[in-house]
Length: 201
Image 1 (tube, one colour):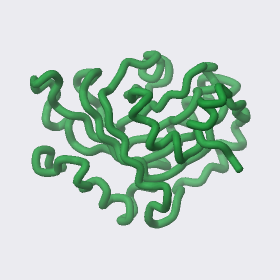
Image 2 (cartoon, rainbow, N blue to C red):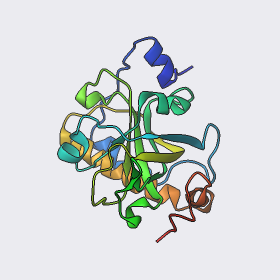
Image 3 (cartoon, rainbow, N blue to C red):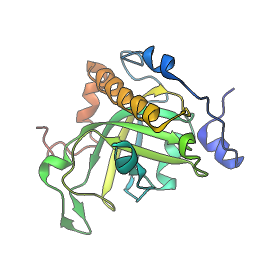
C-alpha cells in the first residue's frame, strides 16, 4: 500500500520521484477524476499564507502560496504526494486592515503541489497552491481557504526547468477543464467561502 505524505514525513523519508520525458507530457489526459469528487475529497485547508522559496513566480512563472505545516495535515494524512486541483480564496484583510481589492478576494481555481519538489531537491514536505488569478499585490500573512477536489498526477522529477514548466502549464489546463463539470463547479459556492461578502464576478 502506498504511504501517505504524512507517513513519509514521520519516517523522515524523502521519496524518489520518477523522471518523465516529453512523450509522457504528450499523452497526458485533458480531464481527470470522476464526474463528482470521491473520497477523500473534498479536503478543506485553511491557514495564513507563508513565504516559500520564492521560486514559483521567479523561476517558473507560477507564483505559489504556501500554507503552514499544521494546516496541511488534513490532506497529507490521507493523500499521497502529487499535484491536485480545487478552489481557493484569499482574505482581503490582514491585521484588521483591508489590503486586497475586492476582485482579488473571489473564489478562483487552483492547482496544488504536495511534496518535496524533486527538481529542487527540497528536504521538507510543502503544500504550494497556485491560484489562477493575477493578484495586484502579494498576500503574505493573509488567511487562505482552499477546497481540494481531485488528483491530477504524481510528483515527478525533470531533466530541465523547461520540462517542469511545460508540465505545470498542462496541470493548469487540466485543472480548469476538470473543474468545469457541474459536480465540481458547485464547490465554488461552498459555505467555506463567504459568497455574500465576495460575490462572483
